[in-house]
Picture 1 (spheres, rainbow, N blue to C red):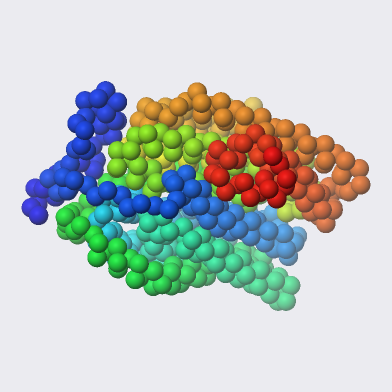
Picture 2 (picture 1 turned 90 degrees about the vertical axis):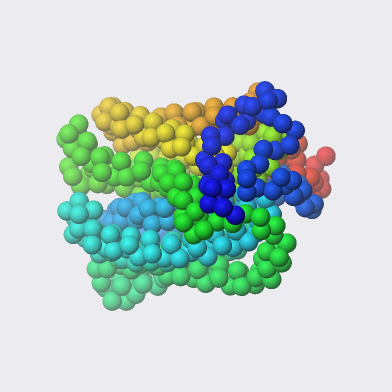
Length: 584
């Protein structure tokens, strides 16, 4: 293969997809797909699959949802004993922990440089072309690159901690303990991207579960020993709690390597069947990955950027527009961001699961020019997102007070801020789904522009909204900024895929109605339970949450089965649930 021909394929990769799709819809495209000099003129016919695209999407989402939900739930539940052990410095400990993690999250995105998502997308693309040899080459090459990137970012965060701490010396050791994670996380995430691109979601999910179990176990053991056995300083306990991230990632890496070893024969067989008509040098692979990765890093950092804007601006703005003390402003920041994040991220994890599961499928349909399948998949993704997110969000809003009591302490202000964060969570989850889907459609550059527009809107309205609404201001500013970004991206997805907008909105409206009806039932049940149980007691709050959640969840399941929306979105397998519940 010549350098010129290889470059031709690289140029094909970065062509704006909109013009190609427009030519298709205008019938200006030829019957056969356009090929580059390096691409086979007759692309291989996809092998027969036992599952439909919808079933594959549901199964992938199910695995990732289980992994994400388990890890997020465990990451939220541990806070109950840990928060109690930190007393009387519980708020200060959570404040330090969360501020360190917000900075770490941004470095995490920088260290991975968007490569894992780009690996997933490129792996799915090469597999669709029956070029499994390139997928393997891509994996080995990017793992080596990410080991170097992780080492450099570790040095940057470790030695930059004093500057990033905003003059708070207690934050320096917290950030440095987190910087060690960057040594191995980038390489581990590449393996996740490889499995994602191959639609192998089980290893991905298992690595998340094991990672969180190891992390939480270390947090609880060290927290108990430092605070209860040694009567130590809460700051030491926080440093151990953040270092636990390294322990978790090390276990996750071991799970992925073991999974890769177990599946080596399968991947070897696929590689033998590879057409091997495309070849790239290491330099060309780097060029491809950089082009794909830069938008992914910006988009992937979107939520972290919104949170960092709050972290670095909220207390300063509040000190100007109010006469609250610095301690009061720090407490409000904890109530509006760190505390709710532990709970709302459980719900947002569902959106992450869908975005992660949908990326290789969207990329596959797009590269196969399956316009009908792409349109149906896009519509189904949006409906499935609201089908999962709406009942979870409304249910958490109904249970905001007992949830806040169970995980932290009885606090009306904290409960209201938790409920407001739940609404914001819908926008965050939708952004994850939309932006990832748009990048699967090669809308990388525009996705970055739309995110930057949303961030600009957030910056413009941040101070005025904090002045008017105080602690609710940052949440409203984030909601407005993400809404703007989502609307732009949704419009572009509709243009590219031509998914049935009216039918999709109609289905989503029904889903929202179902969720609201479930919320009404949950409210009535909670009112009845509150006559017997007190939401100011941790144990009684837990009983209340279980009763109300069970009643609301059963109500939603019954409505979804009765209306057949569950069948439409989840496939025919839900008939087993219908038989179990004797629903016709």
